[in-house]
Image (cartoon, rainbow, N blue to C red; front, side, top):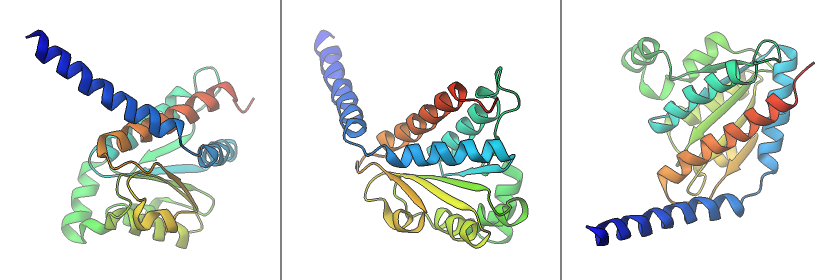
Length: 194
């Protein structure tokens, strides 16, 4: 039993080291650009739209919550943050009636306005619905950001600002999406509009 626990602890330590090393070696300037754009979006009453698939969809919902409420405490109303994967009725309608690659782009066409922001969360950077969302956002006059893992995929070149963590591990990629979001959330909370 002790050997099993020791082996698990070693494996968990390896995961922790990969996460830490990836973050320590990262260029954080893209995160600063995203933070600045989000603060300006907040100041002007514009909207931020977040999208992602699977765990990244969960992260989009989580971060929207942090930005709507978490930064607002004592700072007035929060940022108008919308997680595009959150409304399962809309997502399944669009996937069924149009196609899955349009589930985010079609929502942006309805809701987004020039000057709004898109934050795409993707491990691979190659999901067709993520690429369509970035393309549509640009067509609508939005500024586009992406938090990406692996090689960054096609989204790395498409997004106005790509925050790329070159790690071939989906779970660490998804962890880093939340780390980026939480860094900015805390910075916004400490740097309110008033």
